[in-house]
Amino acid sequence: MSFRREKFIEYGGPDGGDGGRGGDVIIEAVEGLNTLIDFRYRRHFFAGNGKPGMGRQRTGRDGVDIILKVPAGTEVLDEDGETVIFDLTAVGDRTIVAGGGNGGFGNLHFKSSTNQAPRRANPGQPGVERVIWLRLKLIADAGLLGLPNAGKSTFLSATSNAKPKIADYPFTTLHPNLGVVAVDDAEFVLADIPGLIEGAGAGRGLGDRFLGHVERCSVLLHLVDGTSESVEEDYETIIGELNSYGGGLAYKPRVTALSKIDAMTEDEVAERGALLEKVSGARVHRVSGVSGYGIAVVLRSLRSEIDARAAREGADRDESSPWHP
Image: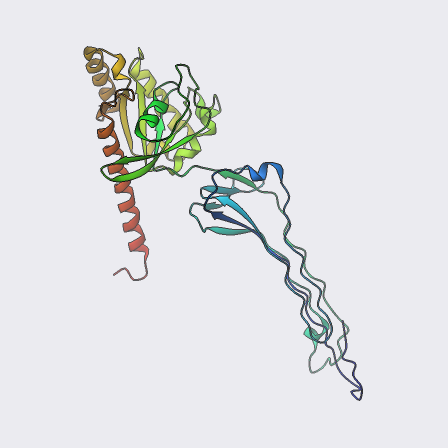
């Protein structure tokens, strides 16, 4: 609250300026990041306060925004850890998670024809304070699924420059691995997801921690260990976990392949391949990550599904455009 006081001006009137508004807390997806490790050790972030208004009709400066930089694919969840507030799927996406409060009104704001000298000023509003969770889901074009030790890491290693840990025991892969795969002069990103076990969709084993990563994939490559004595049960286990997890995973396009055929006889390959085709109701590829047999055919099938999804999304965008006839 301030009044103009100058020599020879008896009734200067009010000249108190408004306060500046508080800064916003903004989350933005940027290039060059692939983890949320920065938020493990620092948990509290504050935007700047707005500056008070002053006499001579001077408005206070707005508070400085703070921008939290995250990798593309990050979901912003509410305090309950389940409600998705915003999904930062592309570089450049941003959202305000905590808005700054409005600045207060100086007494100049309340001047009127009937109140020439208001002795009133409003305080500023408090900013928003909230608790959020950040969850990163990898952005890959295709995802590898299968039971532990089904040959997923070997397949990724054989098709890209990725070097995942490979060994002959379950749960070799403890973290998702990404590889850039090239086929017919085209490239796409393939994600190796840690193996699933029965009950993974309900929280057993490691798989439930990573099923969310394949939600963004255009197509799933389901590898079934050909050396298993029950390929049909192995196949049904994974399909059951996709149904149990939900999120539309069970309805994503899938390419099924019988892996490790280099360790099998021709009769075993034919018998188990036919059995798997009967159970899945679709074509089953025969592949070997060690010898490279059948890999190019599988990659072309994956690429075909990725291109088909891109075409559908392009058509949907055209139809939603205001210039669409």
